[in-house]
Length: 183
Length: 104
Image 1 (cartoon, rainbow over the protein chains, first blue to last red):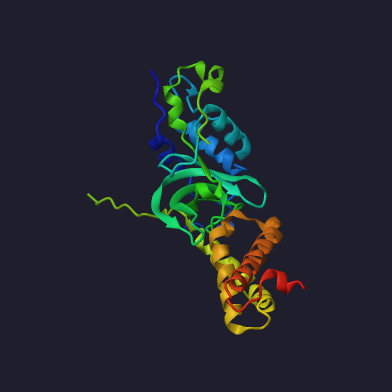
Image 2: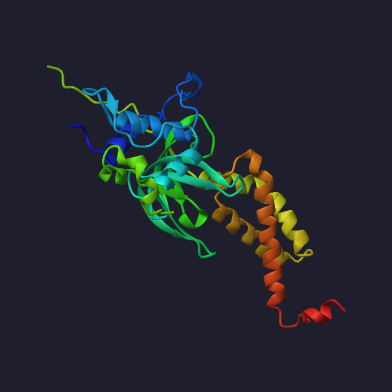
């Protein structure tokens, strides 16, 4: 019997990887070995669900540094959602300029709903992001807790990975095509 | 026995994408005002309206989704928003001649 898929494990593990705001930027502590936001998600997911007795992890998402690959996998598995973000979800931030998902991160929780004058809606969320700045930029050297707006209307999506728990081992890939596509 | 004290030396780094919006307004603001003035043909009130429309669009687009490579896309989107504002104002103007008359 191994541990279950648990968003709380992921959030707790990721929080321990957040940079120290009091650290001197010149001391090099902000330099991360993780080179992309998607790689950070995998690192946090894999090790938060690692069982040392079995020397294996039950983290269900693929090891990739690409947000597009992450989205493709999630769409195939029916867990790519256009819903309001929930704690523990993996969010994918859409870049309208590049027409692709430009960043992935871990949702800690929703702060408040947001409505824009155009009618677009979203949710202000707290997220744990790697390769960012205190401004929540697409690129940067820090791992931080960032307050950002996630909006399904802006093509942002969330990966609800705990839903993969109910899929029996070995069935995850073979029956992917028969499951409904969420987004 | 000496009492143990816990000193919270670690503070998790917190960020907010609103800071990216503020930075974008600082960077683009003066250029946007000039563009708004041109689109408004020098009308001060219209200039302010178009500028505010562009800033609202900037907020909605969320500058934290863009990096330096995307500056051209972002600028084009903001100018397009100001041009749309002008079109909307012109279409709402009851003294404006019908389309057919404007192109005679």
